[in-house]
Length: 147
Image (cartoon, rainbow, N blue to C red):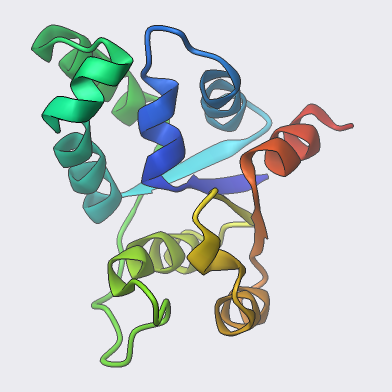
């Protein structure tokens, strides 16, 4: 399965506590799955990981963040995304378009996110038109485990 994970799940996976998000990331990055990552998603992940509040919550030093990002880029397939459409896809938060655009560009089968904006009818229809299913973290992990 070809998978794009939203930044919120990737950042949670970096936590010292690990947990479900870490297992999800590892499953997505290892065969037979392929995790897809665009330059925009990488840049957003890097930016968010450096937010002071998140660094404190996830107990991340600069070295921890860099090590995590280094491992991330080695374990993914990089995708090139065409320019963003003039009309936002995710109307409630157009910055989330980068997730959908990466999924379309990488011919993803699935997106993993807990962001409620992805579960609106218009976003679901856009994803389905491109053969992409959108899952919450618990649903996607069950899918990747083959449950």
